[in-house]
Length: 80
Ligand SMILES: [Zn+2]
Image (cartoon, rainbow, N blue to C red; front, top):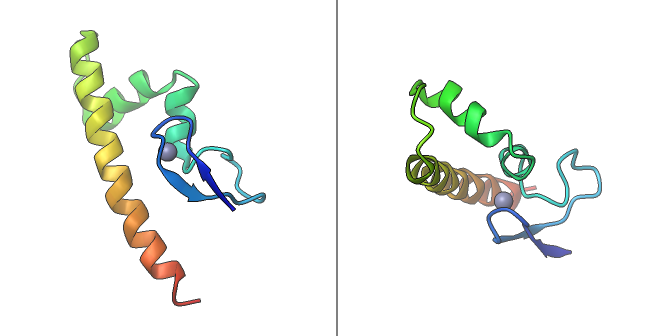
């Protein structure tokens, strides 16, 4: 079953066993929970700037990386 991720709005395969359903990934779940700001800055190593525009830029960058990772993962799953 295909569902739309509430965070990135991309369609993905709904997995009842997924700990982060209905999101496509753990990252999207964290983003939705509002934890993404602190998480992103820990990962990116850019503390101190709480500018909303910067946060949105960081978020969009994370989503692009997520999309690329998901595409690779989906290509891999087809081989099962
Ligand atoms: Zn998502």
